[in-house]
Image (tube, rainbow, N blue to C red):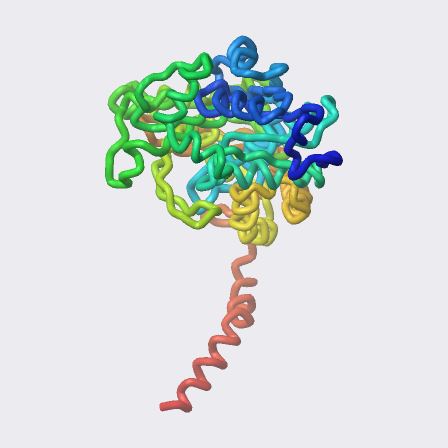
Length: 417
């Protein structure tokens, strides 16, 4: 909340500097933003959040040299995977039926880490480097308002003064050079990448042409089919109450398990989605996603549900998948509507326990077997052999009753002729 003598969280002229918590990636944009905020009179605390991206996260020297007062790293990979990635798998949530929500899931957990720092530092001012065109601004800010209702959000790329000074990358490089900000001023990559342990998302640059094939060198997690082994690989995944807990019979923690499946599926070319999607802000965008481990988990989990989940329960849950995925994609992770759906998901997963066997080969995967102590499959009922416990005579009356409405309707239609 802004103090007396300030407006919209901005420090009053000649007043005491206000503390601002910046979600800091260490790249060009946020490095320039640190300096700009400091010049505006803020004491900037840079926070880099580790969501398992397996890239450099210690940017302390760079942040301080750019104008920050403090630098903090928050490692939340375990929470992100267990409570975020795995929960969406339990919900079978895929945005528009395809996107596995890797970036969407990460953002609220990153903001939770930022909010924790804000509370420790005694401020409600939060800044981020998302633009006004993307989904991330929605995910960051909707999560922030849910956690700190009186938060003040600073989004420099939506600030006319900032954009007049730094309208694009070329000007940002020049600004960094002028002010001695330590960034690598290199030519722009032909695409933009955002990584975490669940996936790597690629967009922008040459990918903005939706007809253009992505370059093979873009892929960092998934081999091309040509690079994948010529022999199929079998993997088994075990779940407890819908949560993945073991690979090939070995119990693993969430981070280790997802990392292991990323390795297995990735080398077999499994887990690429190339799609045009509908952003929350109204435009269509093209994204290419690498999510090898998550792809295996979604496939295995869904198959196990077929063995253990009652039909009507599955129909109700499946009808809510688009709503759940939309809430996550748009940034409503902490919204009460999603929390209500989470309660339903938790209920549906009580018996989703067991092991699924899959075969991976050159970009494809298929389930080859499943078992569960809570299996609803009864061989004595389902068998096509003679005997068994199913009385086929019962089907006669069943079909008479089921066919009654259509018989009546058919008779009524004859009167129209």
